[in-house]
Image 1 (cartoon, rainbow, N blue to C red):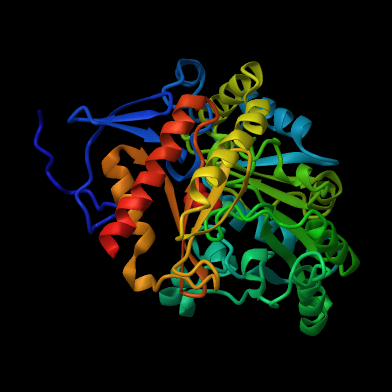
Image 2: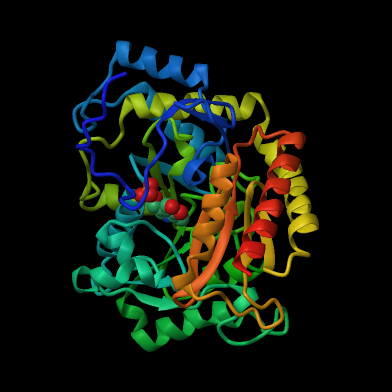
Length: 445
Ligand SMILES: Cc1ncc(COP(=O)(O)O)c(C=O)c1O
C-alpha cells in the first residue's frame, strides 16, 4: 500500500483518523476492516444510504454526455429538471431555484438576493439582517455573521458584517424563563420588537433554520411560532429566509420542513441531503414575484460562481430524488423516525445525564446535562459530548455532536441516520448509545 505522505491539511488536527475504505448502505468500513454504523449520515447528509449505483450511473452518464458547461453560456437538461422537480415539491409559489454547491454558499446567496429584491422594488434602505442566537448557517463570512453560535464566531468578529440576533424558540431553555403555551410565543414576538427598535426601513431579511439542527439539536419550534414570524416579516416588508440545509429534503418527513408549519418563506435554502453526500450540491428557492422583480428590473441576480448550476451535480441530485420517490423513503422517515424517537426516549431519557430528547423524522437531539432538575449543563472545558462521541465511534457507531446550547456550555448528540435504517439497526444503535452513557459516566465518577 502507498505510504501517506502527510501533505493534507486535515479538518481535525488533534486526532489520528482511521482510513475509510468502503461505504455501503448505512455502514462505513475502514482499512482495518472495522465497521461503523453511520447513524448521522456524516454531518446529517447521507439520506438514501452510501454507495447508490443509480446515482453513480447518472453522474457517470452525465460526465460522458456533457460535463462542465458554463451556466451563463448554456443551460442544461439536468439543471432545468432538478429545478422543476424542486418547484413541484416546494410550497406555494417558490418556483425558481438557483443551484450552488454548499449550504453556506446558498445562505450567502440568499442574504444577497434578499437585499437585491429590496433594491429592485425601490427599497434601497433595507440592508440589515436579523438572525437568531444558537443558530447555524455555515462558516463563510456572511453565513457566519448570520449564525448565532458564539464559539464559532468569536475569533472572526472583526471580519464580520453586523447581524442582529433574537432568541431561538428553544423551550427547554427559554430565554425569557417562560413555559409554553402560556408564554404566548414571546420568542416570536421578539422579532417584531427587534425590527421596530432597529428601524423597519433598514431591515432586509430574517434568517432562521426551520427546524434548528447543528446548535440546539433538533429542537422543534412550537407549531404557531413560524406563522407568527412570517406575519411579522410580512407586516414590516422583511423577507423571510428559511434555512433548510439540514432539515429539508425529507430529513424531517417533508420535502420542505416549512410544510410541517404551513409557512411559505420568501427564500428557502437547501444543501446536504440535496446531493445526499454523493455530490456537492445546494440551492436557493425563491418566490416567483421576487424572481420577477429581479428579472424585470436589473435583469440578473448579481451573483454567480464557477460551479453554480453544474449539470453533473444536478444529475446526481435528480437520481437521488428518484430513489427517494421510488422507494418511498420520505414516508419511511415519518413512520420509522417516530419509532427511532420512541426508542431513544424509552432507553435514554431515564438516564440521569439525559435532560431532553426531541426531534422529528430522522433528526433527533439528545441533550446532555449535569443536573437534570436544574438543567445545569456540564462545563464546556470537560468536552463531555466529544468524549461520548469518541467512545461511541470506538464501538463502531457514528453520531453528530452539538455544543453551545447554554451560552458557551451545553452538549448534545444529534442522531440522523440514512432513511434506510431498519428496526434491528435502530435497536442496536440506541443500545450502543445507552451502554456508552453508562460506561462513560461510571468512569467519569
Ligand atoms: C442549517 C445549516 N445551514 C447551513 C449549513 C452550512 O452548510 P455547509 O457546511 O454545506 O456549508 C449547515 C451545516 O451544518 C447547516 O446545518
